[in-house]
Length: 97
Image (cartoon, rainbow, N blue to C red; front, side, top):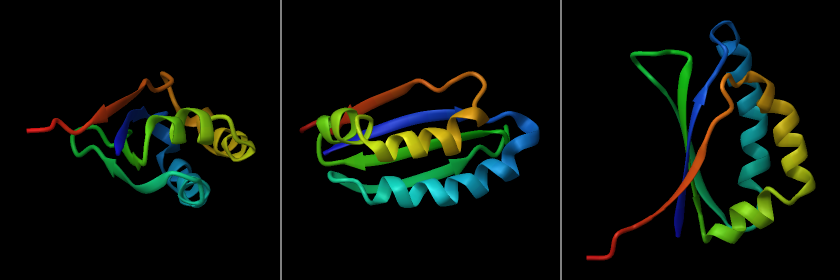
């Protein structure tokens, strides 16, 4: 399992619209092959900043499966215009120990 982490800096006067759009978009990601779970959290200190955490079965499920899909184009249309700057997405794996 891998964890996708994205810090989402939303244009401050668009946070309410972003949250409405995300409610639609989360149905898209949840339907993807290899998707396990996700959570969107809002920053207390900066209410225009969010963190998106998505658990995937493996890196390919996110990079190839989701980002290479027609559904990603719908996700992109719903959400990408809210970000400034555009988020960096990183992937993490559990440390074995």
